[in-house]
Image (tube, rainbow over all chains, first blue to last red; front, side, top):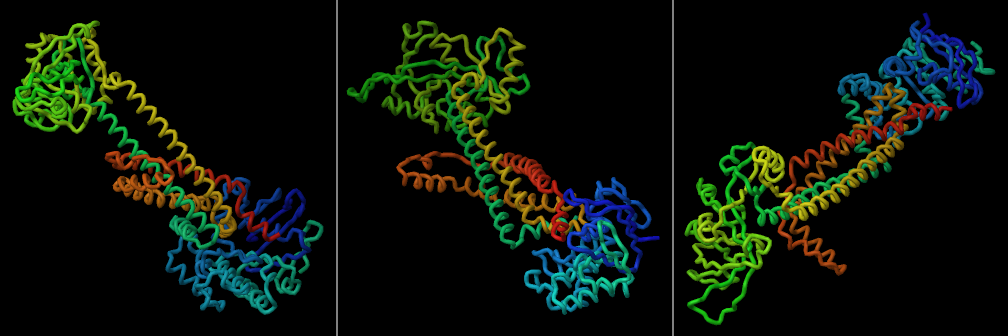
Length: 224
Length: 413
C-alpha cells in the first residue's frame, strides 16, 4: 500500500491551470525527485502532496484513507498530519527570526507536546549532528545561508517524520554547502527509511533519487 | 496550550523593529487611556459627591412628607426607612435684639431659616446626636435641643454675644406670607458649627415644642432617611403613598431637580466622552493586532506549515493582544491610584501649566476627596477585557481571512 497516493489531480494557480490529471504514488522509504521548468507546477504539486494546499479535483489517499472535502475544510487532520508525519525543507529556509537555532528546531517537538527539556535535548543532538553545536544560541540573522539550511533540515527531521518534502533545498547554497545538504537528505531515505519528496532544478541531484519525475504539459512523466 | 503562551510571550518580547515599536505604543496608548478613564471616573465621583453633599446640607432628607396622617414610628416600619421624624423649616429674617453692651452696632436683617426638629428622634441613642441632621454638623449644644441654637457663623454675623437675644421675624405661611410677619425673641441656648458655609451661615434650630408654643405650629412635615440614601427614595415614597394616598411626598431628587439635572447632564457628557475614549482604545487594539499579525504573517505561515492549525495560530495572536491588555490594565490601575493619591500635586502642576498660557483654573483650591473605587476599577477592567478580546479577535479574523500558510507557499513559486 502506498503511503501517499494522488489520483487524477487537477490544480490551478491564480486562474491558470497548472496540473491536469496528475497521478502520484509515494512508497515508504523511497526517494522521489520532481523536476521541470520554472512555473511548470513542481511546487504546486509538492504543496498538494504535503497537504498545504487543496487540489481543485482528484483524490488524495494517506495510508489508503481518502482525505475528504471535510478534512480539508476542518484543517484538523491536515495540521496533525503535517505535525506528526511530514517534515519540510524550503529553499528560503523559513526559520523564525526571533528564535535561536535551537529554539527553531524545538518548535515541532514543542507543538507535539514533548516536554521542554526533552525537546531541547533532542534538538541539541540534531544540531550537533550537522555540526552546529557552537551556533545553537545564534539567531537566523547571525547564521550563514548554509547554516540556516542545515538548521531547517534539523527542524524537519527532529520529530522523525515519515515523509520529508524538500522544495529546492539547495537552490540558495554554494556548491560545498549544497553537497552537504544533498547528502543529508538522500541519506534519510537510503539509511533512515524515510520517504523523500524532492523538488529541484538540479538534474544531477534529482538522478540520485530512486524515482524521478518530470512535469511536462501539466502532466507528470516518469523518467526514472 | 503552553506553547501558544510561550510563542505569544516571545512575540511580546520580540526585538524585531516593527513589532517592538508597535507593542510599546499599544501598551502606552492603552495604559494612558485606561488611566485617564479611571481617574476621570474618580474625579467625577468626587465632584458629584461634593455637590450632592452640599445640596443635602440644605435639604437633608431623602423624602419630605407633608399632610400625612402617618406617624414617624409607623413610617419607620416601612422597609427601606432608616429614620423618620417631625420637622419644619421656616423662612425668617434674623436680627440682633437690644444689646446691653453696645449701642452703636449695625442693625441689619440677615435672611435665613429656622428648622424645628423632633428632638426625641435624635436623643433616642447616644450615638445619634446632632450630627444625625447632617454628618457635617459638629458638636452638641450644651443647653439641649429645646432652645434656640443658631450657628456660630450666624451669631458672628449678628454680633451676638453670649446671653444676648436674637430677634427673629417669621414670615407666616400662606400666599401673602410677606405681608404678615411677626417677631419672636430668642436667647441662644447653644451654638453649632458646620463645615458647609451655606448651611452654617443661614440656619438656626429650635425644638418642636418651641415651635408649637411660640408659633402655634401644629402641622409638621416628616423627614425620612432611607437605607442606601436618596437613590432608594422612590421605592419608599411609593410605599408611603399606598399607605396614605392623601399625603404629598417630595424626594430629594424632586426637591433639587435643577441641580440634580445638572449633575446628571454632567455625568452623561462625561460618560459619552469616556465611551468615545473606550472606542478609540478598542479600535487601536484591533488595528495594532492586525498590524502585528501583518508583520508576523510569515511566522504564522511557518507555524501553519509545521502543524499549527488555523485556530491555534489565531490563539497565539489573541493571547499576544490579551497579554498586552492585561499588562496595560495593571499599569493603568497603578497610575490612576497614584494620581488620586497625589491629586493636589497633580492639580498644582496643572494650574502651573495652564497659568503659563494665561488661564487660571484654580484646580488646587478644590478640596476633593478622590478615591479610585475598587468596584469601578474591576468593572472597567473586566469590560475592557471582554470588549478587548472581541476586538482583538476581530482584528485576527480580518488578517487571517487569507490563510497565512499561503505566504510560505507563494514564496516557493
